[in-house]
Length: 332
Image (cartoon, rainbow, N blue to C red):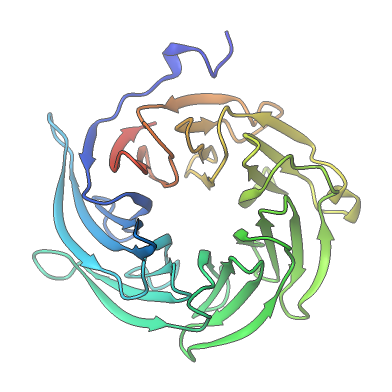
């Protein structure tokens, strides 16, 4: 049976929470896996607003999400949220008003609390920051993508833009660092998948035109069995695997698979599987290794709208559904 139709692969939620506003992104705290930070995005009469919601997942015979805090964000609606891999109490958000927000999740007190550290208003307020990623090698450095098609490298300590280039003719949706921090890959609404050398800001490769049938919305750089590969996700419902060790690798992907929904996020699990957040189709857990790396192992499909956010910590996954304002936790 097709894994996308096999009912035995569907995983139920352990707990479901409905929010006042639509959730767009979420991440577990690296310091305490019971804590979940959710970013929200609301547009009303043309005005975009957002909040950060803090929950504690209480695991018991009857799982529940305990709401600890709601904090209105200064920079508008929240499009992305990432924790710093070094200072694990810190996280950054991408906002609708051209800003990157820096926050601290204080877990030292009896009740954890989110504290705003700084708002870096580095871009025009009409230039939405769509995603961001911390550098894997250099402290205080974040890459951000914008709706004007550009990618920017930001120094959060100096509060300045270190470099910026425009590889896309339409909105840039996503970016990903190479493991050594020397390259940045980006994807845009123009269906382009592009790699740049960060130091020289020169293009080092571009996926062959037509290799994606729609906008590129997710990129994951990974090493499996000592082999480097890059995965891309697209509005065309397809996840693709690229071998970019040689320049010829940009011509075509080595593998691809239709997942039944637009692939908005890709995240590697601790077991080297890959979690794909697939918009209207829900979430899929992919095998991640070997010739059958794109095999669907499990599916979560309780969403009634767009599944934009997903995060995994150990065997625990958090997913969200936008218009029905749903946040869930499920096991893999």
